Length: 370
Image (tube, rainbow, N blue to C red; front, side, top):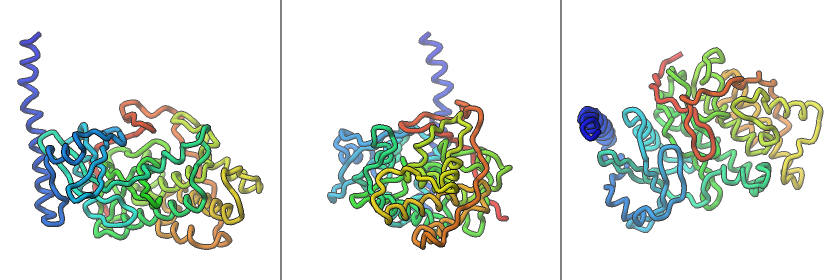
């Protein structure tokens, strides 16, 4: 047995070393390209000092743990330590490359990174109120939210502004591909910050169509065209669909219907029945007409964003205008075609995280013009 194990290790060791060296070359190339604008590099020993030997764990995802720490200058940070990197370090490089291009109040700030052989970590600004999903799933039945409608409304607008910046405010367009409550962080004032750019892709602004070799994202938030090109081209409009699903979940209507990976029930149909018949949506926490107006605007914008065809969805900047505009100027959108897989997503296509089933594919993406 010892002989066999040694033989196997001797065969695998060159491959492992080659993979690590390949990742290091890619990251070193990235650092050279960015020069003085690249995030600050920290050693693994620095991380141990910053986090107090990783003593205060504040979160865990599918690819690592997050620890609270403090930089030498006193700033509090969140240190995301990756347990593994997919493929040739693709997710790590994606996240560094994407978020290093951003500077916006609604995008979480990257303050530094660490890469030493197989050790990978990202250092972010610390956001004290955790993620949005902790508030949306706070009630005993999963249908109540402790945040008031004014706060939810401002969060919805903030997320949209962050996406608008990614789609139009950067020199290179960034498509996030994983907009969901778990990836929306809230600061001390409940200002939302989009995080986790591991699945994101960069594309020149004039090139709107993304050619993909596999779906990516989280079940329940993935746009139809990401599953099947029969619904249209994959583009920044795929983020708009995910945003619409997120907004409807914030409103609470999504939780009124049991939706699973095998369900054929598409909850917007239930919403349309109530809107068309003038029924009460039975939303939680509506205290006055202002609350009802904000809720209805969020519902209508959410429904526009989840239209089946990407061309029928508004650009995210238009969604901001709709949210900030008059309720009377908003029309009820067409009822989108039901789209839910009638068979479970293959286990080989998903990995289990703390909250959701995630269909993650690490195949490459190419940009192409229309």
